Image (cartoon, rainbow, N blue to C red; front, side, top):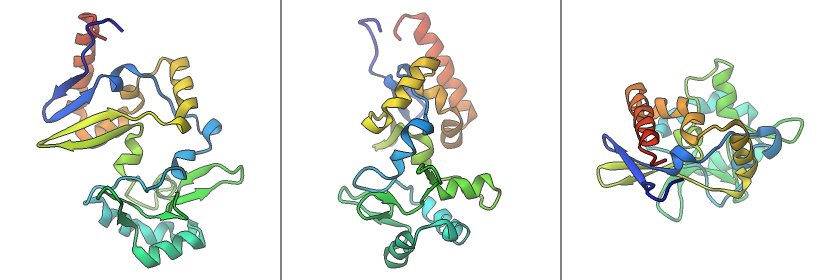
Length: 200
């Protein structure tokens, strides 16, 4: 990285941290066993319009959920408001997302994503999960995209560096899901321009 690196770029009403363009990342489920679904002190961030989609998918995924997760959902629903005032997925025992399931090898997987891949649900999973390790933050009329560093994803960083895969390319599908193909094409153009200018 040159000394004249920029901290962020702006496309329409989004502000993208340069780390999203330069850091390398690729999930390695075999190494991490899906630990991001069960670590942390709050659930996954949920957008208000996603609550209805979670509730619609619930009957499909219900048989996959643990008895403990079902009890939590019966008591408080699929989401709750955390200490910071954010809407997040409900959690079991202070850590596991209620939609977390376990494979025979002990790996965690998302019941929502499994149902979607099997053609049983229209909802993939919350966009915050799909976009990780990018986190979205509302700043006035803009949305900031920041790269979130988390120790449980250290093997994803190793794999990303081995593949030379930048975060924004690893997350091409969810970024298009959230912001659209035209936005993503503009992001790619901006990255190429920054490279040509020696800024990243």
